[in-house]
Image 1: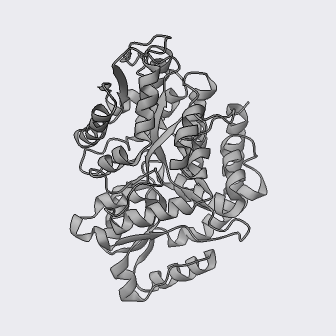
Image 2: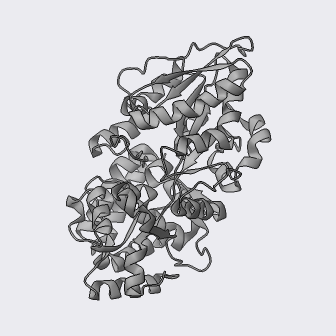
Image 3: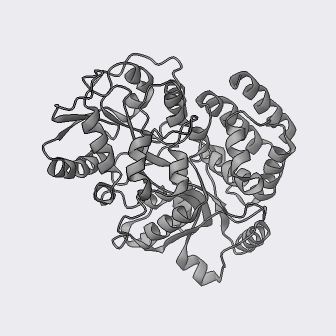
Length: 436
């Protein structure tokens, strides 16, 4: 799942078929054409070069201007280095990144933490940044370091911004109705029952685009079975027919009557509008839900982490997708690239960027949050206190599994929640073929 940027044409949430092509291409499957190599490539350290090339996937004007502004600070402080920004259309960038990395990529390039980062690190297509992390590690929580670490326990990624998922609601509605934040699943069910009797849709829900329900599965799985089982399941190390997974779907089945009906025909923006229009009491989504709120109403938006289900795990895991940067395997200007990445790990460029994206937060835990909105401050606190951070199902698993087994399995479950065994058998069979 990729983030929207407010004030711009919604670039990350494409139609489902397009997103599937993106994910498959990101895994090196049938990448069509080639992303023109922007960097000069090369195998030397590039110590004499004064230019660092930067592969940018933020092609819409608002985020493009934001990252440009953030990088200007590097030009001013780098002692003579300058950044050449090579922007590619967002969809094209993601569809062709496999070929791009195998050609002559830019010195520093945009990507995502977690499984997607590890995939290219495992292929040896990006550089080990462990030495750099010796300098910048104090900027980040242990959870963020974990999300930047490859299969070999080395770091390959520098986090830049992120945003949390949670149960969003309007403070004014809750104050008027006297609702309290539920701490457990039973309390969530009781609250949802009360909302329904009050004439509200308890939980706004949309699944037309295929990915939103993945967020619900993630929350339920790591709340019930814990972080390690969750990531192992998505990595093909656990069985989808395990009783633990069935427990997840049984729990979801218990909650489905409180979800907005006809979800398969609704896009996330429409569900968000039900929350904005005070027709729904809650919505499980990322903080980009705020894009559907007028500026004057955004301060009325609040959220809480999904409630505890299993006391063994509590609420120790937070879904908070991380966007950031990697370094090419053989950057033309290695010294300059490392200096740029060290700069991007500092508070200044992250805060500069967030002036145009107030729904996200800086990943640097030392960033000055005094200029944050109340929602951003809460987002930062929730993320900072998390023991574990997940990305999102389609970032945390094999792209082929996400695009076929997970997408189709969740849709089949929503259509017929009484047929969980068949759904899980189908997902398990596909997992066996994909994770060999």
